Picture 1 (cartoon, rainbow, N blue to C red):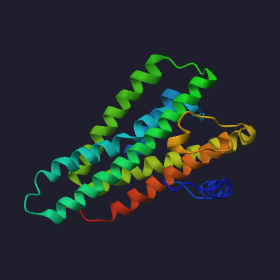
Picture 2 (picture 1 turned 120 degrees about the vertical axis):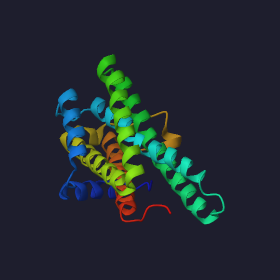
Picture 3 (picture 1 turned 30 degrees about the vertical axis):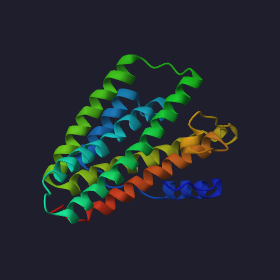
Length: 218
């Protein structure tokens, strides 16, 4: 993902807040409603951590389907190469989501935020499993449907992060320290960090929107 300057991140937050959310599909609305029902409508670090755990799975599903597809491309080197490039792209996006999750987990631990096993270990895994299966099936039937669902999820995440920063102005002056600085970068404040994560989610969304318009592999 492109790393912005603090000034650029602030400007991109304004862009997100001024941009209407995508028209979400029924599946996406059901997923977001489930998250609100289980974790409340308030935006919290713990809720966003659950969001990040679930956010990784479409990329895992696409990667798995692509590996299967490559086994059926004997004698079609160009097609195999295109599929491989998709695998590389999906892995990069998945890794980026993984850094988000690790950083949020670290922040929750640093602040001593209580999380019970049912709501923050068991249920997120159940949601991730269901979302994985749905992403996988949609990709098999019609890749554009799976990409559309992911675009909705990433659009939701983008807005949630930028709204969370807006709701916590004190974060502008709260330093951010992490053991993952070498991997994800350094940020002057907690607000600056979350703006970057929100921007990352927009990049993921835009990549999925682009893929929606492309024909399936053949």
